[in-house]
Amino acid sequence: MTKVLEDAIEKVRRLPEGRHAHVAEILEQIAAFGSEPFIVPESHRAAVLQGLAEADRGEYVSDEDMADLWKKCGL
Image (tube, rainbow, N blue to C red):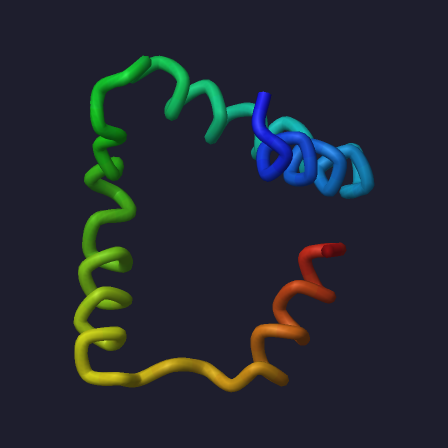
């Protein structure tokens, strides 16, 4: 296991227990593909494409906004 993955798992351990099921569901979806590329679920595709278009235009949120988001997520 890589150090990055170990660090991520440790952060998940510190999340409220109610968030563990959500994280586990996402990991299960990724793991189910094995070495195949991860397919973004159709229900998330529009948001992913919007985010990519914003990045292409150089539209990023501020570091302060990201810090606030991580804090809300318990990270």
